[in-house]
Length: 197
Image (cartoon, rainbow, N blue to C red; front, side, top):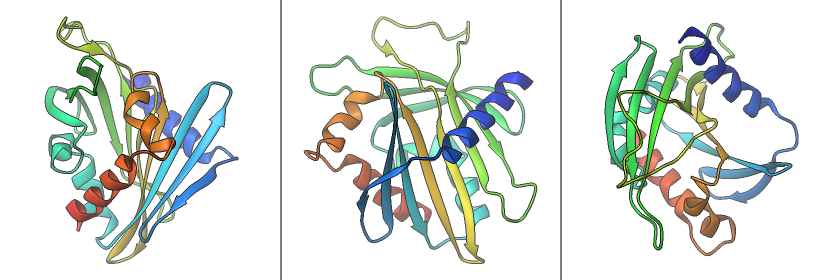
């Protein structure tokens, strides 16, 4: 468990630090970046939010609140509280046209910064749990590496960066967005800002 938790945080930190991010869209409070490496596509959504970083961190690290702003989350239940900083959730997402509804078993690891310039971190990855085997009504999907880094800008504002390393399980939700026929990433980002503020 300690290794999983460490590698969860480390994978997100590594993804965030990779060189070669290309900005693809800039809106008022939202910037969207993509990063391609071989067959792996990652994206980053940077949001400017008018709340203190510790408030954004406590709201974003509680995944039971995620349905309030992310319409891709249909249900989210906590399966196991491993520790104060690690929780395992079962998430189901609404079916996309022509696709079976998907479900995910994810480990969410949260860390407060050790030094002032470091971000708050909420890292997400899929795990296997014997107590929650795949079910025939869902297509069990995998999250390789995703999560949030939250940087303090001032006592009343912060920058929230959301990262996701795209797998085939997540691709149907993003394909239309990246080709320009849907704005679901921007819409979700706007909902997230509204929820946090």
